[in-house]
Length: 616
Ligand code: SF4
Image (tube, rainbow, N blue to C red; front, side):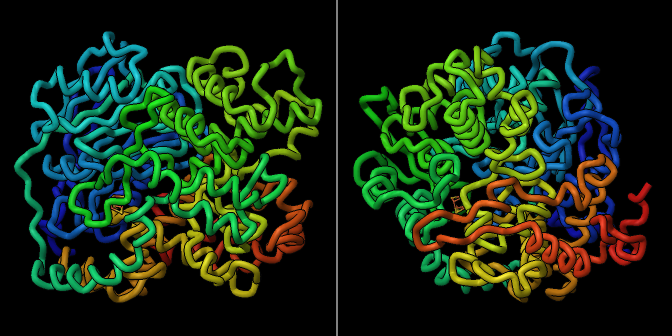
């Protein structure tokens, strides 16, 4: 095996939160080639260090911050990082990506991955420099929101925005299971939104992680070639991301609603009136509330926006993403955009995933409508109650009243109710679905059912399905979903922004991707070999989940409404995914992957992917 390419920092930092000691481990060249970085490195470290018996909130869980070979290079939009951990939502491996400046700063320390082990005795924050880690007391930060925490850490470190901070809010401290992490840098937030990374950090008594830039500068194997690739990508990228440049992801509200595949009222229907959609659309946000564009380091797309809402006392907040508008507006039947933005800003500040929180509230509202929850549970359980939505955000983060039950997520909430409540769940493997319809998009049906992260739209991607590929047919859709999972695993291991990848080079791995990796590393991968890396990463995630007892044929399922109730009206009326259809797609999916009938990777598959050492 040749040397480690100098595009890598070359080290993994292991931090013992209890003692405050840290240890360096060299990144082995063969591991870089097998797992790339980011997502791949995170799952490898979780597989090696977290016992299958450990609960997400056990101190044995590990939180990994990982970057890839192209972070901190002039190549655009490689400014994302990955947080990997065992999720308190799914009980399985989870990786959540975020943008901003933290990942780039992490790379300059020379640490391709930072693994936080154990738990601190008291509330603390962790500072990473090129010299290693220090664990600092943070009792004064208890109860601060995410923005306040970032600011407080910057004050303590005393170098302004040269300290790059990602923080948990009160929800993380209170172990709200879907608590997120928010990174606030100059003019740009990055949110590791899904899966509960904030709750796991909270369980470790860690309020924030800060990185101070080091001197490491990655060396590219063929910088001119990478520059040429980047230049060639610019035109399709800018043309392919016009909506994002103008409106951010909120620009998807109107077009997706028009397809009749946008969940409303806890997904009872999947289309609202044009008037309602318009009221929460990116176009309206742009016209009335957006104050400026914001961007991650080194990205010309600038999909981020800040909004101001005077009547809500919001002078500057992150624009709600499309997924957040689904969770906090359409699923609630709330079209008062100012209240929706207030709820979203609260979620960001309190540190909660807007998708899981919103879908859990929508679930509770339908349970109330169906008589499974009484009015004594909360006065805020009517669909359409915008003020109640805002109240519930605070109650959830503080675990007040019904907030304590909402904090568990919809699946655990359902366990405390009559069995009939299961009919109103909208998620897979314990994680609530994102906005892309599992009834109206066949690729999402099988994609969500098999996703290692459950209801995540960053395992199988919906983008091509909206363009008419594998949206309404099951023909070849299982393979499509699996290969899309390889695409996202590679992208998150290179820590390339998904929007930039899809807009610039397309939604499938091709020569442009492998050429870019080769130009960065000096390797000689072809697209098939690059895809095999994605396949390896996905199989290792699956293996971790099999060992944890949460991945089998019985677990690869969809909720009742998706399998038994057709979309009632609109352009996608009649669509759903009956059990027989899902079973047939699972057969094809397992066969394509080389898994047995119960969805377990076979010995031959593990050997082919060089994963045998992880089997035991
Ligand atoms: S497209 Fe948006 S999320 Fe992606 S790198 Fe650019 S600003 Fe960040």
